[in-house]
Image 1 (cartoon, rainbow, N blue to C red):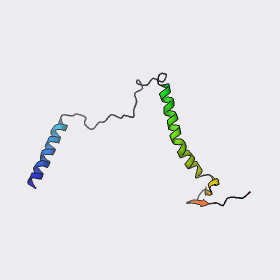
Image 2 (image 1 turned 135 degrees about the vertical axis):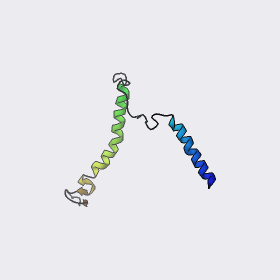
Image 3 (image 1 turned 180 degrees about the horizontal axis):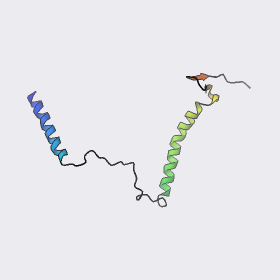
Image 4 (image 1 turned 60 degrees about the vertical axis):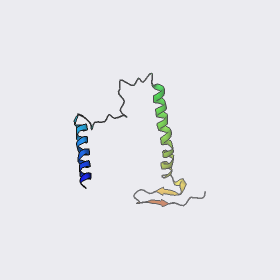
Length: 93
């Protein structure tokens, strides 16, 4: 038990010494933020266009699924004010 306490104390002391020399050890740069000076819209037009196309193509599948929830063609219909989705029989016309 004494050995474990000494080891824990040594680890805390070593951590305090290592982190004591740092001024801002909790600040982390955000990798998703792009500087406005680093981006050239003319030179990087292809990159921006492909990025927008990828965003659309990845969201399009979800759009299809979610929009099908609100159409009566699947036999389910959202009734305003209802607590759940109701099954609506398909009309045979």
